Amino acid sequence: MTSRKSSFVIVYHRQPYEEAIENGRPVFRENKSPNGIVPALKGFFSTAKDAVWVAWKQAPASGKANFERTVRIKDSYGEYDVVRLPLTPEQVKAFYHVTSKEALWPILHSFPGMFNYGPADWENFREVNRLFAEAACEQAADDALIWVHDYNLWLVPFYIRQIKPNARIAFFHHTPFPAPDVFNVLPWREEILASLLSCDMVGFHIPRYSENFVSVACSLMGATREEVRPAELPFHPTGVALAEPSVTTALAYQGRRIGIDAWPIGANPRVIDAYLATEKARKRVAQIESEIGDRRLLMSVGRVDYVKGTKEMLEAFGRLLERRPDLREKVKLFCVCVAPADGMSAYRAAQREVERLVGAINGKYGNLSWTPIMLSTRGVPFEELVCYYRAADVCLVTPLRDGLNLVAKEFIGAQGEDPGVLVLSEFAGAAVELPEAVLVNPYSHRNMDANLDRALDMDCAERQQRLAAMNERVRRWDVDHWATHVRERFDGVPAVGDSLDRDAA
Image (cartoon, rainbow, N blue to C red; front, side, top):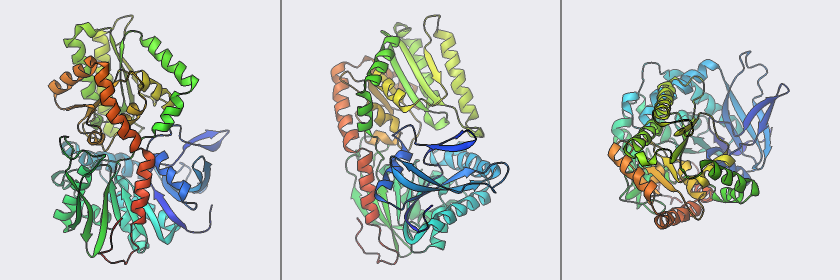
């Protein structure tokens, strides 16, 4: 553990490694997948020698006496401290499983009918956020940059500002941010916004979500737009359900300037390329293609969640087999739908519905030699997934709402000379970057059916043309480009006390 204070602190609920017990002792392994949010954030450690990561870990049932609060990690990203906040099982359940997932999650994804106010424990949510803020401030220098991540830590910036008024605070949303009429369902709306407006910079994946935040900040809290610019690539400003022609880049509030950023995290296509070039990967792709034979392989990758559209996707696949008997025994769907962790009661009904639909479709159309759907409720290793991406004819990414969705970008990055087709929901943030995908409205049966047919019937020339445009964008605006952009925005965050009219980066 370093004794000096850190100039850069990341605050995120997840730990930046995979923890296992070997011979009675904890072992910390680097994340298996090189893609995703955690590896992207760890990439910032290469340029911040004294960086610290603050996360939570459930304290053992025996208590906190022997809890190792700080661990020193050394991996391919560098050497850094991880400070773990010990939470009791009761705190975890109330903070994460109930308040975050049953009250906040449905509002973020514009499902106010799923909002469950009754069991929410806001006092516990406040307390956990305060503990995160205190843990971050213990590690941070007075003028440090503290980067807070995601909605379940909404109140952390407020407490940090109280403890370290000169700290530079940034916040990044990995989820959607809803329109004001939906966000305002939350009875804690002013408290949440007051905390976010304590930041120096608030970031989102796409302009629609940053504009939703700006709208509610202006209408509810009296903030004013200080700077508005036209939306630029990689965003398409019109013609897509989540498009925005302009984007606010700064707000003024109570004499302070708050930078607003909309920039989507990227995939790491070079890592995908490197693995698919190996002999092991080539053999695995050939094996998958041999097992599939002359059938068409469709795949879907996600986790159990009513916002992910798995139910709607499975229903569309069932309708495909019903209306096109010629495709029976000629298609196979590989559905990866990772089961929720224990305690996630908000997703139990969604998991039961997925399992029911898979059983019903397989029972109705399957036979001894053909099972229409192969369902995996366990996570599939990244190396295995990219081999399936390369072999697949169609990738179905059909959320009802999603902050971004990296699966879509990973699938594009894994395609070869005879590419598959990306079927992408209009309501995934990635659709604003990838309009050449076959865009679908998962709320419309007719739209889903017509576009699934279109994807399956598309000739090679059109598939190659669509892929070329998306592949160029995925590779140009990759995870390294995202990191460079964020660092530039960080460099433009002024020290507290600088004048309002100072130019932003």
